[in-house]
Amino acid sequence: MFRDRLKKRLKRALGREAPAPAPAPVVKPAPQPVVQPPVVEASDSAPLLKVVEAPVEEAPVEEAPVEEAPAPAGFSFAALAAQAATGDLGDARHADQSGTDIEAYRERARVNGREVDLASEGRNVAADGVEFIGPVDNESSRAAASGEVLAIDQEECISCGTCVEQTEDVFFLGEDDKQGEEIKAEVLKQEGPMDLIQDAIDACPVTCIHWLDGQELEEHHSHGGFEGK
Image (cartoon, rainbow, N blue to C red; front, side):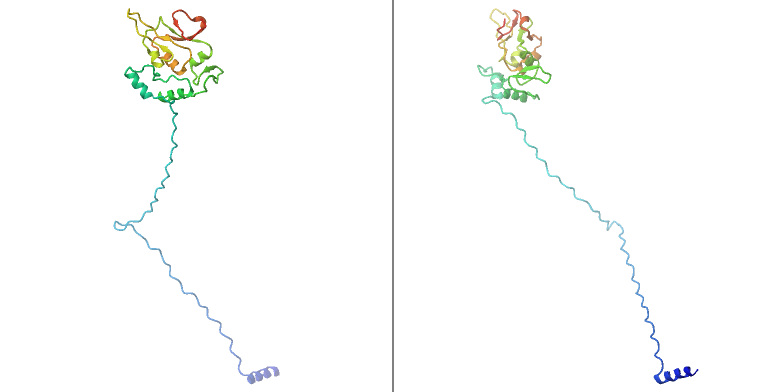
């Protein structure tokens, strides 16, 4: 009890107790207004905008020019055809260009609109092992390589001249004599353009042009250029 009184006296001497500091007020942030995006409504006066992607233009692809095989030097189909039409062909080469070099074969194929696989000049061997003569593989070039003889059966020939129209370098048809004897087509030689020889065989209306074994030749067969019989 004495202590309590002593404490009270000391407190009076020192002054009143300092009041406890008031707690700092809590300040809450003011609420921010929520901004809504504007609503755009379509109308006749203000239609909604549409994004249209521009088409992508592709650069044009240029095709490489196709090189045509050059015609043999000094040769002109147009000039020779004009001469043939007027009957003034004379000793000029026939308009079919009866050459046997690979360029002549290539040019004839181009003019006739044919697509053919050409081999080399001379003797060749086909994929099936059969030999053929010249750049083109056909029945005539195979027959020539096997030693058969090109012949015309003059008993069957009707003198139509179809074979000469294909190549007069190999076939010949003269004029009828004054006594009215009909002249038949003949074979001039065994060598020649095998594409045109085959064309003549295929075009003959009476199929009188044949490749024959030498032993099959008869007197009525024209087989110029063959010396074996």
